[in-house]
Length: 317
Ligand SMILES: NC(=O)c1ccc[n+]([C@@H]2O[C@H](COP(=O)([O-])OP(=O)(O)OC[C@H]3O[C@@H](n4cnc5c(N)ncnc54)[C@H](O)[C@@H]3O)[C@@H](O)[C@H]2O)c1
Image (cartoon, rainbow, N blue to C red; front, side, top):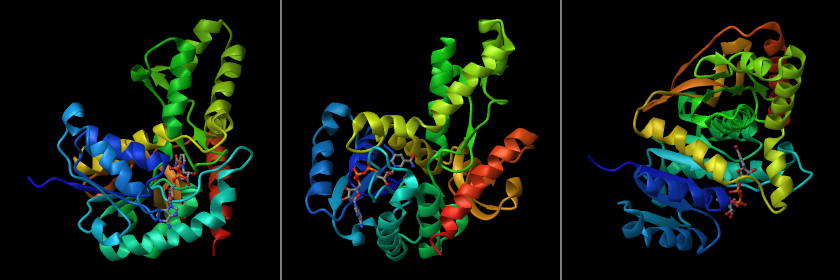
């Protein structure tokens, strides 16, 4: 069986970790494109030279020429500026729209069969733009936000309850902004509702609610928390790992259910916008969107998050 091909557009902080994870997991051959001369070539050479130590077989190539992404199965886009302390993701829209426009044109021309996973911020707007310019079907242009936002929520719950992160299940929906929707009702430890465990721990429903609210708040601001600490950029290990989970599900047709920024056509009452929802990811990209009923409070949060996405996306028109 021929190896799969993954192309990374953007060879910065996230791009470097993506390349290393692709190699370590032997997902396929990897091309890294960046406009800075020498940067993608240097990073890919650096990773390739420890293949014998890390025990992987993969061809790694750095390039400044879009021609090299031809034949990609999956393209992951991180090209664009990250935010600095005090900035919101939305502040990046002008500069990153210009970058995304040239990136999407390159993908359209040279990798017309690829499934594209966008990471660049502001996420919901950049995915929308990428799909518009490539003209690829909606199921093949998606965004990474929910896997990471959910993983952060899971981490805080696991720390609070003193259990393994592997046994916590939780999901966030909506846009990749401060109005994202962490779903408290479905957060569980192997099926046991987290709220029930918090009530037992604190012997008070009120205190349990307070603790959960604090975790929800921290999840919403988690990207900013890392930015404030790093000062020179934003999170990069965690978004890379999250996008790799999505890419792996597509490349290996795993059909994992991952919170994914998908184009909605009526699902969850949203029509014509990219928003984070649970999706089945397989060889055809988004193969299903799993719908379920939100309660009134969740729906109100979802509506608020979708409104923020709409106003950002509409500002690009
Ligand atoms: N979706 C998420 O969960 C999430 C999380 C964190 C960061 N991000 C976003 O991901 C993006 C990348 O973050 P990073 O930390 O890797 O940034 P970075 O600055 O380290 O890397 C960005 C790279 O893009 C390259 N680039 C700029 N213009 C380009 C172009 N026209 N074509 C190709 N490459 C180009 C730059 O040379 C640089 O190497 C940012 O927009 C950031 O906000 C998203």
